[in-house]
Length: 106
Image 1 (cartoon, rainbow, N blue to C red):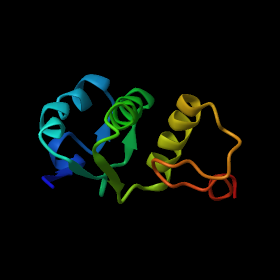
Image 2: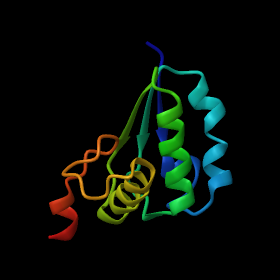
Image 3: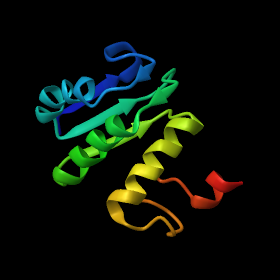
Image 4: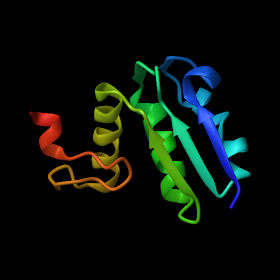
């Protein structure tokens, strides 16, 4: 299985504010079966950027896509976007990023 590791801070920025910037990663992601996106030192991800990544994951079920080292605000953004995409904001756990709802409201 071909794996690529993407350091989001180094390849994009510590503040990921644009859907278009994230879309530039898609060509690289298309070449691998497993993609590890490392969010270490990423301070913020916009709703539109999170949406692009979650839609890519949803549209490529044959790929293993992992999100690593997210801070709390980045996790919350992914949670909110996935809740909207899945229509399950009241579920105990969302599958893509593995965030438990009670951790967000505590």
